[in-house]
Length: 101
Image (tube, rainbow, N blue to C red; front, side):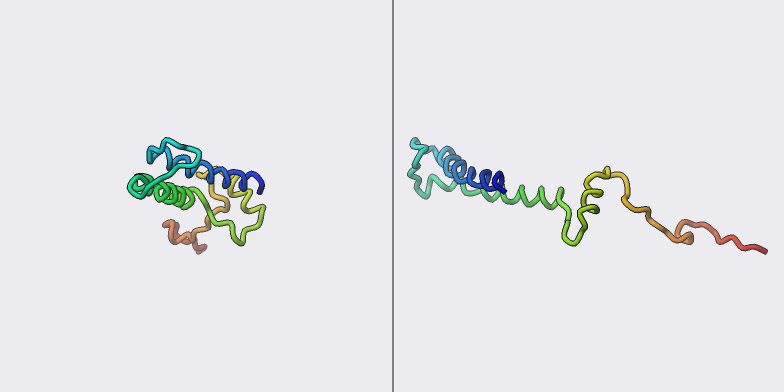
């Protein structure tokens, strides 16, 4: 928790500093920005939020309701392997029923 808190607070420093650099302010410690100079920096947070949500939607998976063992097994299993074998009825595989006569 402490590391996450520290990384989040690091954004409080990097955000205004980055905006000051984009807007071209000469004073990076306490930048005085005007509306017309801030406009180029507006799309950047939008891009960062959208790219972060795209990453989570592509790479993340739901862990709610899963046991710790199941989550660990899902993370440790290579992507090409199934965790549990799939049971398919024989009629879907084209196998005819053997009858004893």
